[in-house]
Image 1 (tube, helix red, strand yellow):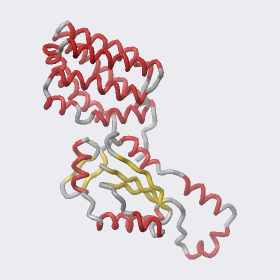
Image 2 (cartoon, rainbow, N blue to C red; image 1 turned 180 degrees about the horizontal axis):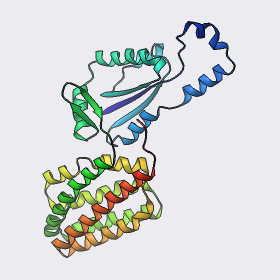
Image 3 (tube, rainbow, N blue to C red; image 1 turned 90 degrees about the vertical axis):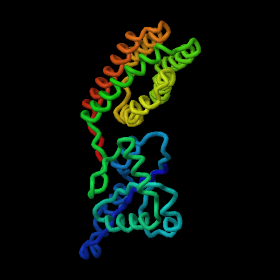
Image 4 (cartoon, rainbow, N blue to C red; image 1 turned 120 degrees about the horizontal axis):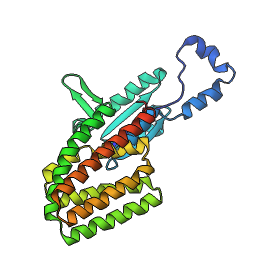
Length: 280
């Protein structure tokens, strides 16, 4: 899905007195340029929380009627988010009207976002961005604890020597990224590690439930910062998971994975509590 983040910047003078005198105030032009150059914190936060599989683009729009913009907008977006100062809100509504008239597949886009837990639809009241807080994180992890422990049990009954080699190779990659403090590559490799465990378990419906909001969790790690100090424990857990699968120890696999997910929940909530909540 292609998502556009459109920021209406700049200053609009609508008061008649200011129109005649305000533009001559000392420093007005300089200050207006500074204000116009500031990015939209709300749009940047939404972009940071958007799963990587979506294509996103941030556009600064100083004038919705500019000829070059009129030619390229609405643009090839499935859904857009528009941010505006109060003085430009009428321009924002006019821009939104262009997108409504362009017949973008809004309903399909909203279904995708709802399925990923990024928005909440309310009967006869439209949709809103879902509050991302400790309560939501707790709920997501409670579901993952139950399902991932079950997946680990099944994986322990089915793991082959080839499967163990695959997991060990990915874990070696994770440890290289840990040593290099490469958080982004580490997150991607970590997701692959757990994906292989799910493939070994061969319970696709259960894996789909467990992963419904995994991209949201990865986005939260990116926003709040992945604490590299916790990776020693993560890597140790992974090594014990591999050992349990190799030995076909169902109970050990389930217990280790359960503890692994619980520690992940505690670490993420702790990171969220230390950092200021991103403003929407």
